[in-house]
Length: 204
Image (cartoon, rainbow, N blue to C red):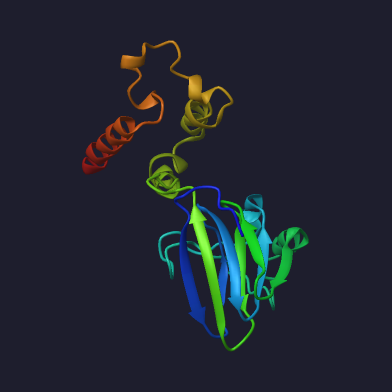
C-alpha cells in the first residue's frame, strides 16, 4: 500500500491511448501510478527552466506553460541550451504497478507507450493555497521593466519579505495585531491579502 502524505491527495484517473504530455511543471507534488500500459517519464529539476525554452506563459493548452523542445528530436541549433538540460534529464519507463514521485515544480514530460493506458495520480500540497504563478505574471507587469536602480530596490524587498532566510520574521518588531499581511499564515491573513490585491488590481 502506498502511504500518501496528506489527506488532500485526491486521486485522478487518466485513460487513453498513445499520447504525450509536453514538458511542463505542476505546483503541487505528485505521485503517479501506472495501472495499465507503459509510460515514459522524463524529469528535469526546476533550475533547468531557462534551458527548456518555455513557450508563452499566458497562452497554453492546459493552463501550464510547456517547453518548446521535442525531446525525441531536439533541435540543438535552434535551442542550444537544451544540451545542458538534457545532461540533467532523468528518464524512466513505468510498467503496471510502478509509481513515481514528482516533486513540486519539477519539469516532466510524460508519454504513453501503448494503445491503451491507465494512470492514477495524486496531487497534493496546494489545496486552498495560492499559486505563485499569478505573482510572477504581476511581477512582469510591475517590476521587470523598471529602471535597474528601482529593480534592485524591489529585489531587496523580495529578499527581506519573501526569499531571505529571515523573511518569516520580517515583522517580528511589530506587535501581532499590527502585522497585517506580514502575519502568520491563517484564513484571516489570506482574506486580507486577497482583499488588498483585489483593490489594487482594480485601480490598474
